[in-house]
Amino acid sequence: MFGLAIHGGAGTLPRAEMSGEMERKYRSGLAAALDAGYALLQRGGTSLDAVTRAVTVLEDNPLFNAGLGAVFTLDGRNELDAAIMDGGSLKAGAVCGVTHIRNPIELARTVMEHSEYVMLSGAGAEEFALTRGISLVPRSYFYTPERWRQLERIRSGDAGLSALTISHVGTVGAVALDGAGRLAAATSTGGMTGKRYNRIGDSPIIGAGTYADDRSCAVSATGHGEVFIRAAVAHDICSRMRFGGRTLSTAVREVVLEELPALRGEGGVIAIDRHGKISMEFNSEGMFRASRRSGEEAQIAIYRL
Ligand code: ASP
Image (cartoon, rainbow, N blue to C red):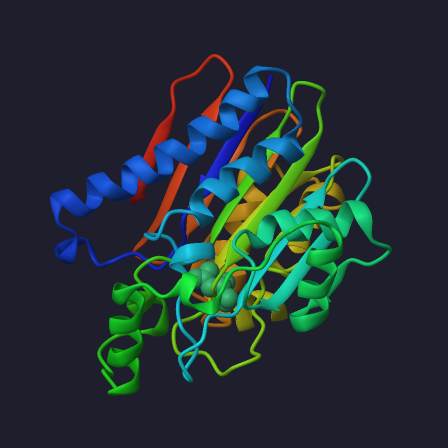
């Protein structure tokens, strides 16, 4: 048994504003990432490779708020965060506040595999990238007209829209179980549109936006990062399974539908356990998501089914 689930963020357009053509584009972006990661699992690849691949494909798609499509900070820059975790060894790698890295998930993985650290930020992370042969891209690489327009709406004080909604699409992430029974999780983001410069969200925080433990499950989150950090969302879900005897879906529902709303935290998670069971839950209007388990068809969805 193996399986992969991915998300493209919980900050979807309200259903009424989503045109058929937009929806098709998002669905095909999700399908491309899912297929790329799933193909690796099918060939006997590791869950770490599958989540890295799926997230890289989403980072390169300007529709999603990660890599190329990253949103802007209030002062008009792009600062990217990413994390990855291996559920067997509990090794993890993360980068935050990077501004010249095309694929932050690749750098997070390099931090995990080729440094003595878990998290590197800003200029230090980028210098480390160079020492490992990862080249830097100019800041202009991350400029997309759509994201700039969203920043301008935030700057003009368009109060009718929440920060998540105006981002249109949030963070990206992937969780996987491979044929050898190993779990992995990965998350990558541009953060929230109009964030203060140097603000760090939950995505690169191990235990908040990203966590994997072969004894329970792998989780990648998307939503209002400050609340997800305070609720230690990803680790809480794993702990409810490991110490509280919950099933994956109960653990996920308790955190996403009870703990987070109590703190007014909007968003959702994708998770997979060591039996290949997948849970994708959100308390926002929608969450871009897709999944596929061995022997089954792919599922792609945006709003509630
Ligand atoms: N969780 C991300 C952050 O707070 C944003 C998102 O998922 O849309 O940086």
